[in-house]
Length: 213
Image 1 (cartoon, rainbow, N blue to C red):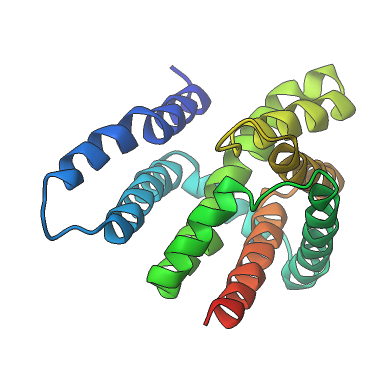
Image 2: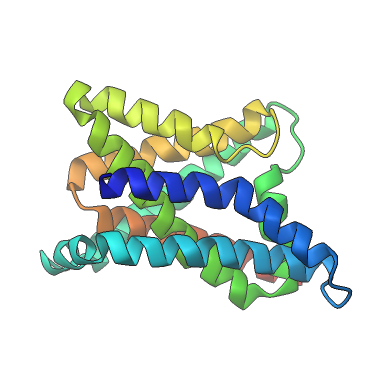
């Protein structure tokens, strides 16, 4: 089995079956509150995925980082990603949607422990998602054309971020996925996409911390 298939199987398992099993175990432990359980489940999921990525793709990411300095590109595309996030949030408002379910989870963890939230959503999440959606999925579909590769990866990115059937929630991640897909197509460097995604999420978390406190 190729390493791409291995990681995709691990990704599906850790986002579906594993959280249910772990949540069931935590529910019978009296000292574990709902907030602590939520943090522990998310941290466990991303810890498994990060270990898998380091094991399967560590060398490739290191080689990509060695090509040339990326700080300027990360800041430039990271700011662009953040601006796209603001625009898509306003578009979502047109659908009179409530706060996206995924964002509610982020807010709950931010309130519970903002340092852990930065680790989970500001670092681990972007690394995992860029490897899955840009490096693997886009890379696999590139043979059928870059436009198709960007669209398919963005649709999957949007669908897998939906906590319920919500067009607004789908649009937020679909449009962000298109932006990151274009960045990957333009730079051909997954490290730049990871950096831009991390930049966006960290800025968003810091703003949430300031607004929620």
